[in-house]
Image (cartoon, rainbow, N blue to C red; front, side, top):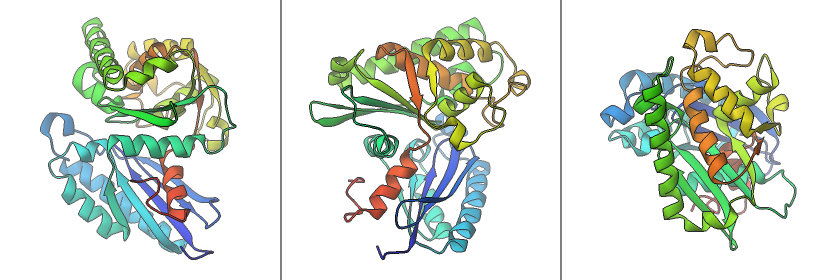
Length: 316
């Protein structure tokens, strides 16, 4: 890439669509996040729904305008769980690429986890204990931790939107819904440890880094932040007891009641409690009582790959 040119990373996630524009030195110029719920209905129908597509295409058009304003020379758009699971995912990628003018790539769960790990840990100090990242998305949750000299990762097929749609619902949760949710989440963690048995070697020995909207909104609630700012949320801590407290509180409230809490982001009130079920069980399984939030994530990992001497280094 030519020196002095700006680059862009776009993440079409299951619950939100995000943009990061950076200069050639890796300094962030623009960060945008909008809840677009691309995965709405995918779990039930196996297809991206027309209303969800239109929401996302409209947002991508505005991102292209921002990229033009900042003279973006190169970029990459990635899609994750919702598009992986949809029969019309290729159609979405073609239209997304045409709208943004950059390559649109479907990531595997392992690629998503590696990029998230690279982005989240780049600004952290070297640690005697390995960093474990948990990225609670809308359709999936990525886990990644280095064990025996290699990054071990697993993509759980559960995220905040998928849990809400499958078992928990979006409003006041019943005892039956809660029981079904725990059964599903714990079963998926069982699968993670079966398929990546080396996870067992780091139980009780990791520093947990939490990414994405579920963790960021939890931090806002736990610390009483009225409005989101990246500086306030980045590298804040939350305990297992706080995760449990907010999971129980929100599960016992209507969506309207949840919106009354300082720090609850509009668009998260229907699914945040679902994401906290996943986050709580991950913390229990890995034997950790505290997490560190990171607002550096997959977007930062993509920017690193675009600015590297080998642009495919992180993506292959």
